[in-house]
Amino acid sequence: MKNTFGFLVTWLIILSAPVWASTASIRKDKVNVRSAPSLKSDVLFQAHLGYPVEVATTKGKWAKIRDWQDNIGWVYRPLLSQKVKTAVITPERVNIRKGPGLKYGVVAQAECGEVYKVFKKQNGWVKVGYYLENQQVGWIRHDLVWGE
Image (tube, rainbow, N blue to C red; front, side, top):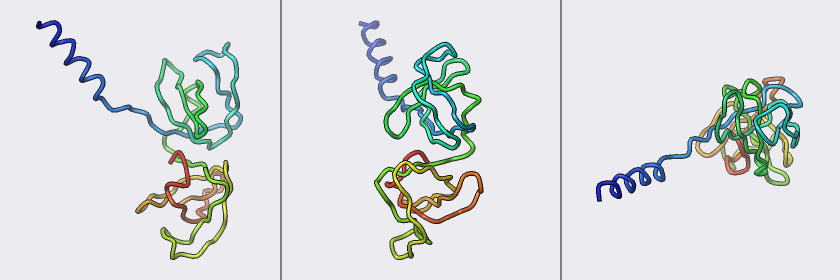
């Protein structure tokens, strides 16, 4: 009876624990995303500078990542940055606004798959801009981007 109770408590703790996935961005250009945590494994695709990913787990110096299209693979951990936050546009086209709300004018438009640096979050909106130039552009609704 004690063993069964201990087993059930252990499983309840495991199942109720939160998933500790975190976001990161690719810190170099043309980073290989591999099928396994090894330089000898197949390259599934290449990720470009600033590309946002979710880190699902780590194994040694490798991170298992997932991107906005649910592609999964392994990246060498030193090639990831958790300091610089980025986001990718998910709809076909979105408006970038002057402020965090629909009442603000449109200053630019962004297309599906474009990656932006995230500068700030506020009330369901994210302030985005250009990664390399470190230049702010404007605000996009939070639900129209992935990765920040």
